[in-house]
Amino acid sequence: MTVQVCMPRFFFVKRSGHAVLIGVMLLACSLGACGKAVRHDIPPQPLRLTTPKGAAVDAVFYATRVSNPPGLILVPGYAGGQKRWEACGRQAQLQGMHCLSIDAMRTEPDSGDLKDAFEALDGAMDALIAHGADPKNLAIAAESNAAPIVLEYARNRPSAVAVILVSPAPECASISARNAIIELGKRPVLLMAATGDSLAASTARQLKQAAPGQCEMREYAGSAHGTDLLDTSSQAMGQIFVWLTPIIGPHA
Image (tube, rainbow, N blue to C red; front, side, top):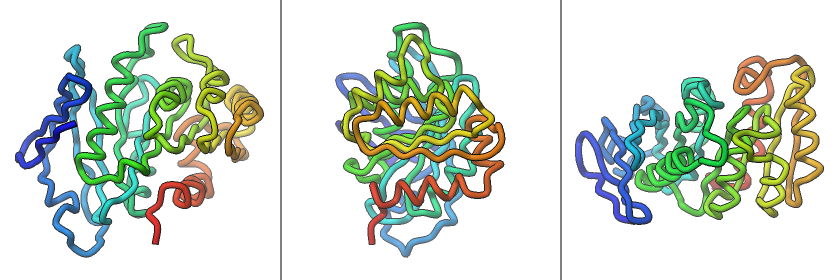
């Protein structure tokens, strides 16, 4: 992979013979490449990924000035919009992580055709690494219908070392979340759901039983779904990072 980053408006990330155009309005220096003292005052930066098919994918980048930070990708459910993860992105920034929320599923993927969604997620991985995230410490979080897609993506990407699923759906685009979590193997997974969100809670319990690796579940009162759960629970957001930080860092 080659990366061209010293341009004021955009850079290219080449991956597997094709280019992902990432439109950015920032310089590498503003993303912590200057080695300055750790600060958490960097405003969220809009990105635009363009897949080889020409589809534009919107994203928001939350940068930290921590050196060689871990990276976290946040994926909303289809038609949800990346702004659903804004509070979590800002919290990841405060925790010393590079974080990118991406609109990989603005519409439900066609059954069996996940190429665009996977290319968008590859672009998100490349963008984090290009801006200094540790390629050995990358995690992905997804909500709702995006959960099965992210599990399917992660099982073929060893670079995704941990997965967080908020209100997971049992399947999407003919992808079974249960089958995908089994194929994920021993990598750690955090499951979160509200008790009153009956389908998501039931799915999370089934995934916990099926997971062959380290898998923890957090269940909350109420019926909030997806990232709404993180907004309505006083504990959920913090518990994500209590669980995730020992796995990907940043480590003292």
